[in-house]
Length: 85
Length: 175
Image (cartoon, rainbow over all chains, first blue to last red; front, side):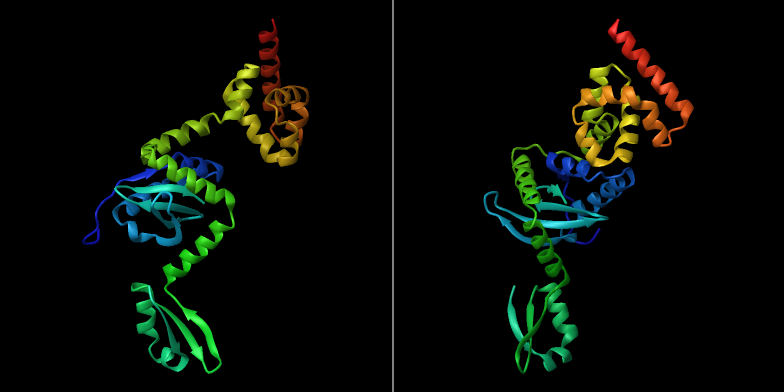
């Protein structure tokens, strides 16, 4: 773990779960996401900022690519996976 | 984030420094030649973010999903990874259509799931649309199961066994 990194827990929205199902994530892909979400929880700056601000929710969006999936997330108390594209 | 112009010769000379500043400090450099602006130097993450935003904006569904996801997280519906895995496993084991057909027909959900898997892979979305109703699908499978199995290369003995067990189930449920 890098110095200054703070381990944040990762939460998934039910919509992200639905997206994973729609995109027919395989078991090995799910395992990969499982591993990567631990890394993301340790260092939320691994992804890149997506310049779309959701003012209504006061959130900035980031994206982290895992294989063919893009995890769209926000950072707060948790790293929150909003949806998967 | 700052944006500044850089003459092409100077940019060429200072490229390693400009590249670092673009990545680490999110600076953007507009590279100028004698005719005017020619290209832009920006950090890789910055570039990926712009591409991602463009793609998202072209997909109304993705934008709607983001709004729904944000709302769900705001209302405390966030799930931990172990919960996500558990739900996906459960959903995989008996997807809604298979559960519905199994319930309607009384056939074992595992057999329905296997049949659906074979059918959906082989008959394609057009035929699937035709059999959207779970009841129609079970009826049509009963009549044409051996044919479908023949076409879709399910071993014949297995298909006969499935057909027999399905017919028995229907007879039993009818009596």
